[in-house]
Amino acid sequence: MGVNPFIEAFGGANGGGAVQSLTPQTRLICGAVVFATCSVAPLTGWCGGVLFLGTALAWGVCCGLPRKRLGATLTFALILFLPLLLLALPARWAAGEAVPWRDALRPPLTLCARGIVGIIVTAATLSTFCLTTFAHGVAALPLPRIVASLIVQFAHQTFLLASESRRMVNALRMRGVPSSGVAVQMRVLTALPVCWLTRIATRAGRVGDAMELRGFDGLPCGTSHARPSLRDSLALTLTLLAFGGAIALRWKGAA
Image 1 (cartoon, rainbow, N blue to C red):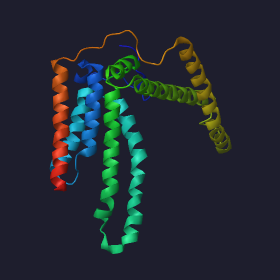
Image 2: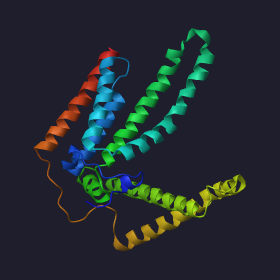
Image 3: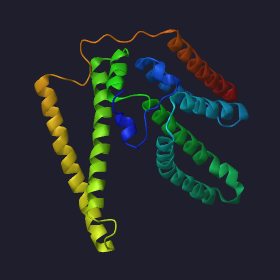
Image 4: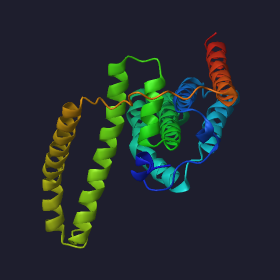
């Protein structure tokens, strides 16, 4: 297997779990269904909580998400979503003492939990792909070609952004910016967005020109897609059952 750009963005090795043996399109569908299950499962009772955490944990283990990637993804998700807990403060102040802290914290905590788990499920799914297999999986889905091409290009450009950012960080480290004074660091910090956007725009233009000259839209051409096997059918059945259970619990709670 070639170099995995999704893993390279955070460091680590390719995912090597049981999901790796599924066809690319089945991995994408199952990952989307697991994500939907974690988004729909109610968190007001223990049944929904067990389904929520159990589905995400089982999917992460089956994908073989590397520990280094898991740690980086979890850190990113916590930084992104934990500030939402501050929303409980204005809700508490607006309602006064009539609303206990538990009720004020419940909505932001639910949003944080779903967001963190959603990012981890997405990272686990992508850890089973390299860019080539991802393109084959998207091309095998029943999507319009323009939509599939946009998805593949989005994944490719995301990798380019991460790769370019990593190069700039390494260059700054070699020039001793982290150990410089505060004034130097502030000047570099203010100039960094301009340099970063300029490099990204230049590289994206070159890639676009090369693709236009070759008539290439990012999708594999002239290749047969892998046919789903019994293992793929079993994986789809299990994930759909989990999603059906989440829908049933949500419906029961709303009734």
